[in-house]
Length: 87
Image (cartoon, rainbow, N blue to C red):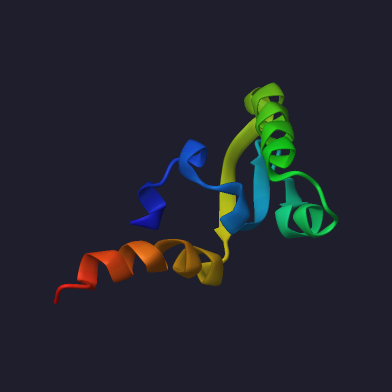
């Protein structure tokens, strides 16, 4: 299921880091958790990352999004509870 999620659909607050794989074989990691822990606004972080990915698009082979399973679980728990409440 998660392999079918597009980058536009990944909430910034569930990301741990992003690995940008460049066409020349090099990689760059973006530590999202660190930026958020330092007090950066999530909307600003998301906007800056999206802009950089857009600008560098012709050099990027692919991008790997590393998510926090705990954050995803917390985000979907209320929906799961609501769905299963009558069972």
